[in-house]
Structure formats: C-alpha cells, structure tokens
Image 1 (tube, rainbow, N blue to C red):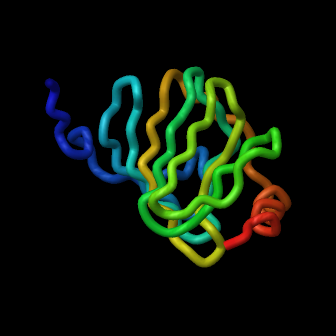
Image 2: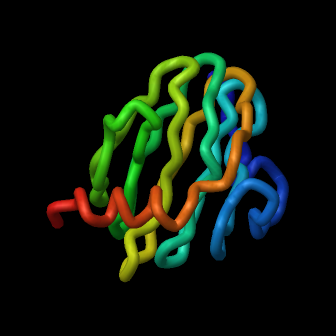
Length: 130
C-alpha cells in the first residue's frame, strides 16, 4: 500500500498554457498516472490533446463536455466518467453556465495540440441535450 499525500505536496495552480478560460488544478499524484483535480469556470476548456495510454475523466460537479475529434463524446454531468483511449484526440471543459469539476487520470505522455475554437465549442453546445 502506498498512501498518497493530498495534492502531491504542491499548491493549486491556474492553468493557462494549454487551456482557454479560467482553469485551476490541484495535482493529486504526479507519477503515471498523473492525477489532477481540475475546476473549469463556465466555457473554460482544455486545448485539443491526446495521451499515450489514455485518460479517465470523472466529473464530480457541474456539467460540461468531453469531445473527440472523431465526433464521439459530448455532454458530461456530475457522477459520470469518460474513458478516452490511447492516442484519442479530444478536449474537455465546462458548459456555458456551469462550473465543471473533474478528476483526470492521465496515462502516459500528454501531447498538447491546438486551441479549441469557439466554433468547436459551439458545435458541442448545439449537440448537448441537457
């Protein structure tokens, strides 16, 4: 058994380099997998990205999106989980009028790609059926 110190011994950080909008992360575990508790303000989101060995996202509060470049995915609500397979290009973030709090388990290296456009965000919003 290995007890993991809360927040991996580091403070909360505002994420700006690969995120749009106001996003805060609390590192929980920094090895493989990398585990972060992430809070997205309304309309905030990640850039497009992929993980060598996949990512598990657990939504814990609010509502938002997990969207793949293949058209799969869509709205996500609190108490839902989403698995993105190895190499699957995707983004995730909050809905237009809600925070989204999630725990993200990232396996392997993360490759950050381009920013999610307003058009991409609006497409996800139109497809949502909350």
